[in-house]
Structures are given as structure tokens and as C-alpha cells.
Image 1: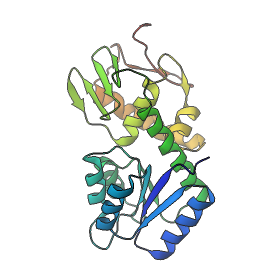
Image 2 (image 1 turned 90 degrees about the vertical axis):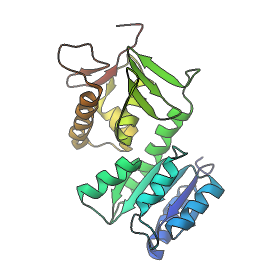
Image 3 (image 1 turned 120 degrees about the vertical axis):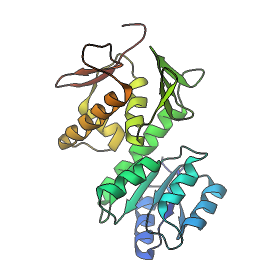
Image 4 (image 1 turned 120 degrees about the horizontal axis):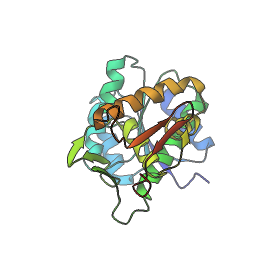
Length: 235
């Protein structure tokens, strides 16, 4: 049952707010509503939701301010639901700490699937089985509690999606995860066309980690199948 999950919806348009509430109630989520950034921050602090659905065009402050506030103390998943559709808007929200970005108008099934994916990824991080909440491989370290990745002690600036991919792979070490499996876990739906999106994210991850051809890589590309995070006991 999903009814143990509380979702905060920060949306100033009454019709959309009501529509999203109906969708969430139908899927047995608890719903908390807010119509402004400042009130949303207050609701977040008071209710400590499991996930936030956030509009960016709020009447008092931009939704980016809400994301930045939350990220100072919490890794709670944030899904942006906005009419803004430019790449710049999406990059700004994701770089600020949003986990996902959906453009209005949106599909009901896709919204619910992305909520499930965000909650799954967050639970994986929260329930990390490692005693110190960290994964290490060579000079790579993933701190699940802080959601920080470092190489040789230097923090690597990853987007939320890039971090979620690394977190998922690192908790399935030495196991080949197919493209479809990773896509469904990270984005919440099956879409063969999303393989390119996954490959772009992986290329960005490798570039940021400093992996080069001929070197020992942290993540192995199983061509035509998927990806595998190395296990330090099986190099």
C-alpha cells in the first residue's frame, strides 16, 4: 500500500492542484497542498513529506528557491511540474537539486510512474546496507547519506539523475543492469527511446569521474546490454 507516503504539492493554479490531488488520492497517497513558495516551505518543515511535486511559477518566489531551501537539509525527492519547457529551465531546476522535471501538460500514468521511481531511488539510498552509509571503489566514494560523490577526496558535481544512476549501480555491484532495468528504476517507465538519454547521462558521469579509454573504469559498459559497477573484490 502506498498510503504511508505523504506528498506535498506546491502549485498555485487551483485546477491543476485539484487535479494532481485527485490523481494522488486515487493511488492512495496522502496529499498536502500549498499555493505558494513560502507556505510550501512551512508545510515541508511541518509535515516532512516523502516527496514534493513543485511548480516553478509561484506567486511569491520562484520554485527554484524552494528547491534550494530543501536541499540545505534534506534529500527528499522533488519532481518539478512546470509549464516552462526550455532546456535552460530544466537544467537550472535539476542543478538546484530537483530529481525530475515534467512539462505541462502531462500524462497521468507518467506522473504516477515517475513518483514511484523517485520514491524507489530515495528508499534505496535511505536503506543503504553499508554500515557507514558509504560505497568505496578505488578512490571513488559515494556517501549515500549526504548524496555526495568524491574521487580522491574531491567532490564530483553530479546532477540528481546522474547521482541516482551511480547510486543504483553501486548497490548492485558486479551485476549487469540492462538499459531497460536502469531506465525503469531511474525514470519510472519503459521506453526504448530513452536508451539514448541514459547513454548521454553515462557519458557525462564518466567525463566527470575522469574515466578515459584504457584506464580502469568504475563502471563497465556491457555493449548492447547495459552497465555494471565494478566490485572491489572482483577487479
